[in-house]
Image 1: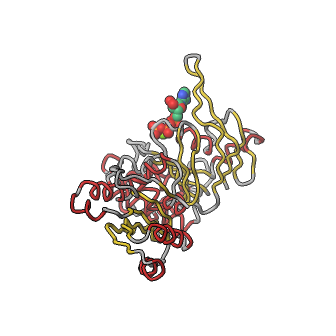
Image 2: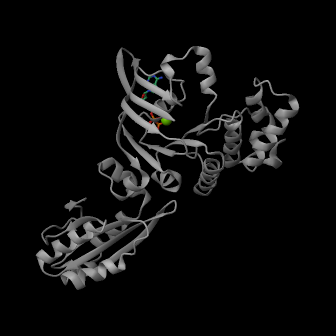
Image 3: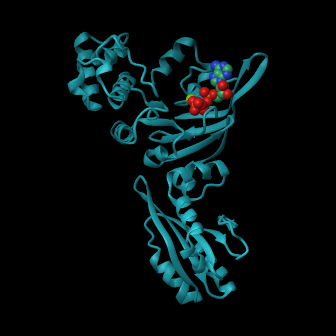
Length: 357
Ligand SMILES: Nc1ncnc2c1ncn2[C@@H]1O[C@H](COP(=O)(O)OP(=O)(O)OP(=O)(O)O)[C@@H](O)[C@H]1O
Ligand SMILES: [Mg+2]
């Protein structure tokens, strides 16, 4: 659907070259809700403007619906651009026009009759849950409602892709949730492909099936959300994920509370993560029956990545040292992701000392 091959974008500023996007390869497939995460200045908006054909890449190829955009005439490019809708953080509505007119404006040059346009606008407002606001003005709406208008307007020309640049960043958590639910509905019912730019991993967790992490113009890690959430490789990715899960707070509490201190004596402290519906109880029971290793659960949590459970446990392990290692190998064999947090008493800091698959 959208394929970027080795795309770079540079800007010249005061004689200096700014490499906003560097050698990005990305493949967004039909029906994806693709999250692009990164801190301010990472190059997310520039990257999305490349997808929107508003920004010509300095290097590389942009292929949309099997068409190489570099090869299109300006007219063909304008036509192709219509298959891509976009929404922004600050909605960009026309304040002096009604909600109806804001949406209708997108249909102005489509050759549709007045009646057809009217019907289309009403359908769109119905779709985003604003049928009763047609005659209101933007200033009479809440932020969430304004973003709904922007979504209706972006969908007027029936795009195949909707690009969202920080579309929920100006909204409170509850409104954010409602907008995400609407986007998910549009993805399901219209088969709309969505690219979602955000600096909040929580947003990715709610609706994205894939995610790419950007830093200094480069994509440093990408994959399915499940893959990235259950086994992030890069430090920055881990940072982002920690903001959307509770494991760090749990580890801090374990470290701080003296009640836990004696529980850690002569034991290993291990974090276990697993994806899917596998219940971990038999696995924990097997550690004892197979290896005489006792696992004591200090913390347990299940996060949901849309419908997929992602479990994490922090446990202490006691038993023969070599049996502990065997027990962990057994868990890894069962698809559990194991991170050893503490093995040695002299290690006062709880952190990953061994881990991954
Ligand atoms: N038109 C431009 N001219 C010069 N430099 C630019 C231009 N557009 C972006 N940049 C620079 O490119 C880099 C990436 O900017 P970009 O807006 O893509 O980042 P971003 O990840 O969207 O950040 P934010 O989260 O703050 O929106 C920044 O250093 C920015 O200053
Ligand atoms: Mg931006």
